[in-house]
Image (cartoon, rainbow, N blue to C red; front, side):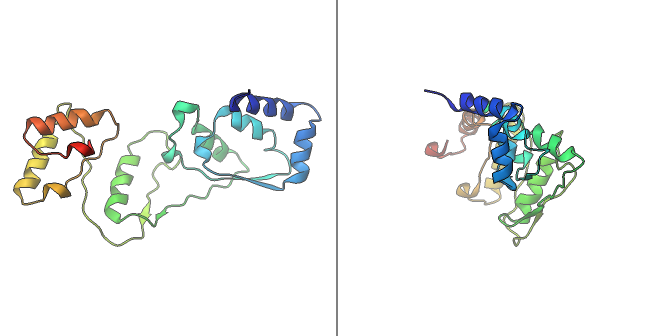
Length: 193
């Protein structure tokens, strides 16, 4: 039984051989290759197909380093930046969001611009949807006292508790937020924690 990494390594080694039959077969068979979700590629996978980069095969890479989620599995979104920096690369940034309203897109732009080393630094994404509900992006102290105060203000202003949502960047924050809200007697649906 072989795992995927081992098989990938075998293919990479065969592709790297001088006069590789597999490499020649790929060059003769494919004029263009599209690699989707390129932000989730790892070094081994990139090295495997990398032996074709300077050949007659046209590559199209589709990826967004802002959506990289498989770093824990070895994915390296820096590969996007390396490929983009090559002299013969053409980069097309898709900067229109058709799914979300401007409030969500603007909040996302605010958060994304705080991230260092982004491939799309200083490029703003624009929304095509109509206006939607307002949202606020805030940082909270470790004990979530300012979050509790914000929620209490909303409740006192007449906002329905069911219309207040708290999104966490990391899953392990949920319990601490729940405990802070519970200690302040703010009701939270326990089945949504």
